[in-house]
Image (cartoon, rainbow, N blue to C red):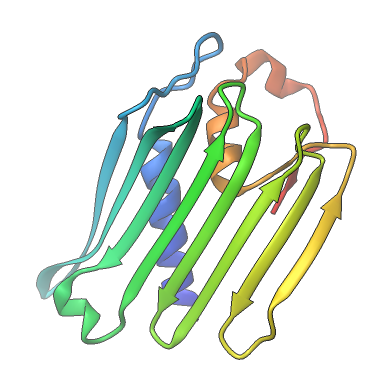
Length: 172
């Protein structure tokens, strides 16, 4: 995976989530059915769309499921194809339940499934990457471990005054 494609994917991910809803301290600032679309384009002598990204929040039992998909456009697929999906399931109080990562960028691919215990202090990570053996690892910590999407949704529910107090934060 090249630095360009990694930056492109992360940019799409952060921009999609950053502009999807305002920060709030009381009720969750997101709801079932909320979505945001983002189109990254290239302008240098020609104008062409590079990547389409979509974030959507859906219902799964009593939990939220936030899914982010990012795909290069048909023209750029012939040069360097990107097809990424990130999916996070979390409870109404924004505790992570599971996280799925499915990345295909050029010749590189990676898949990961993360599952948490009830209080989100124990994380099981099962992952595969191109040219690497299967990985099955368990992480434990007294502080809640969060994935990237869960961090962003959690921060949007925090009272801004609470952000001034330093607290430990673990992210995978």
